[in-house]
Length: 482
Image 1 (cartoon, one colour):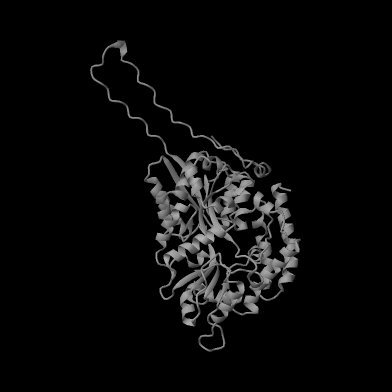
Image 2: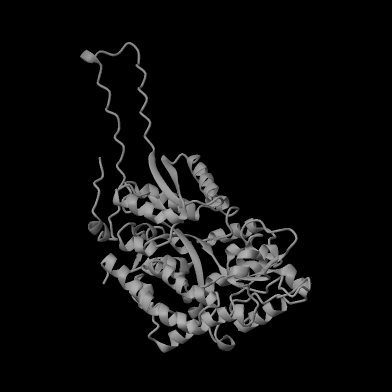
């Protein structure tokens, strides 16, 4: 049956509550006719072989990634050996082509059955467009799985009362440390307690000063103490104790405005961004963008020893760690004056989504559930990526797979990661808010002169806010959400 193409207007107004279809049962072969004339046959005839059932075919789309693509291939091979009657095809698309490709396929009625990691991660926007199935009907009848998820993962992808995606894995935040450089400088490692009052932004900067060194005496810094990988205004506003996004917008999954008309939010935004700029130009513990680009030519700065600390996500310690260095991790610093802010309290949670166009929703759910929660699947995934399974039962497998990667004891590291998940209140807005992707280029562009030392934070913020609001409104208009 040919799938009819839909117009753009109809596509944008598709309901997120698309009904889940049922698989058709295979028909049994007809019964054999009785012998002619009622006479007994001379010899029994061979029973005809029953025709083999044709396998159900589904597809999963993923970003082009040299680590993750082999992982998906291994997962699919393991799945094929289970003889489930479901065949899975992997569609690999470059990151910047992922979303346009998906939109084009959906408009043509040929969407992949499952959407994995890739593109600008507008999971909420896909739901608003009606592109994905709500997964509550499945999870509500699967109490074992439902109770196994870390609560924050379900909360992050429950928008408008509907579960729009199945959480797959968690990347935690922190300050990631080249412990060898600390040891060489005689500097104590930071605490590992996410719930303690110590380790503030000021503590991190002071520690970075001790680790910013001219090692060869030529008057130039050879080793920097800190590289803040975060540059999002959302992140620094949160650290300084406020939030650009309202609780209503988090609940609906739709960004309507930044809350910068609240003086407290505005002040937190400016102060947080100023602290990052000061790390470069006042405290001089962070390389300028040009210097960072030059140092990165040799490889990731934390791994080459060009910086002693990376304030970012756990991807800082993914992959092979060089043998000549030891590594560790610490919580996000408490932001705000004298640590009166927060630690950001976020995660990065990658999910799977099932297309509302799939002809085989039950098959797509079975494979997704297996990939998310099955012990065999998790054991395949862990060696490829240093991310925590979204189900708590997968944590021991994750820790076993990590081995002795850090100077922390296994128990200390396990406690550190679990506390990071426990204190988190949400995922990042680019994953869970309709409209965030539409303004990302705006605030990045407006803040670039700040990081280059060409503009003050306040000047950039005052120019940025109306442009951001204009971008948010334009996106709402395009989606018919005004």
